[in-house]
Length: 242
Image 1 (tube, rainbow, N blue to C red):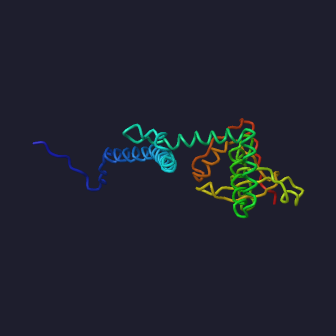
Image 2: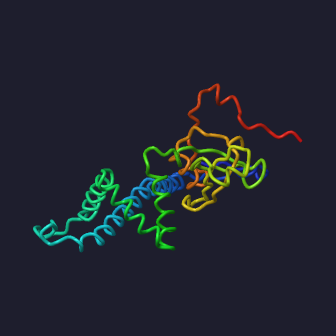
Image 3: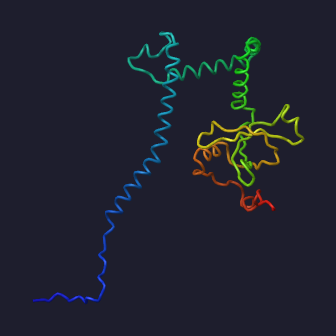
């Protein structure tokens, strides 16, 4: 009969090895699950927001369409996006009308009427200026990303140049002033309007889209530095001398 080996009592007991197969398997599943969220969530949210926008426009425009001009009157099922298509066509026609001589004359006549309404004229003027600034092809607003020291020295914030400072604000100082919009995180539609000397701004090469992504993500999504290697080695911001 074969005897089992006798273990020395003074010899420490070797720890038992636990095979990490099950742990690795569940960690892998967790990684796959989180990766699926990262991939699917932006797509799903984008599709949902787009669908909600189309449904909202359809709900506002479809009741205004006469039955004979509504495609849904000739098919036994709903056609999502009809209101959006009609809105795009209508806005294009309005833009074409406003671009010719007759349209400009009608616009001037309408604006003269609005100018006589105390509250409406202020609201209309502000909205018109905002849309012209943001959407006009010749405008350079919201197309330059800069850094500015805010809210104190040696602390930098991301901002967007909106326009050159004019009027009373510019005339009060000898400095060349610039209007900048400093957005908040994670909602870039709110923020602060600052009038800053141009020499205090550090221009960036990143696009406005990348700048907005940086603001919304709270610094998680950082765009790459597209400058040349020589430019990357030359810092534009130097430490202050005490």
